Length: 129
Image 1 (tube, rainbow, N blue to C red):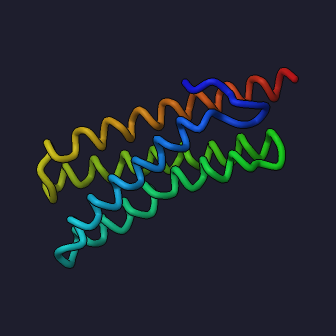
Image 2 (cartoon, rainbow, N blue to C red):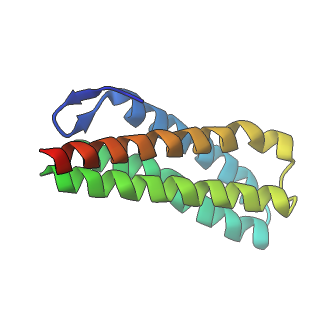
């Protein structure tokens, strides 16, 4: 888990990591968007949730309060979980080859775990303050 850079803010690592993850999601969704139908629909869902993670992490960096920070990071966590869901759905429906999605699915899971730890730590620090 990244160490806090200052009160209510995380190190730039999670922000960088979620941005790079969003880039991977965009590239993946370009592939899904090549054909209309279910591929495109699921790709749109994946695009929304996968890029929203980093956007919410970035918003959290400018949080106005500790509760605002916790809220934004919790939203990022929910989006990471949703992204993991859509990736699993794409694999289960065989819209893309599973081997193509293993690294990005693993990264979605790792990001969700990191965000979960950040949210728990921030809540603990806030409640204990």
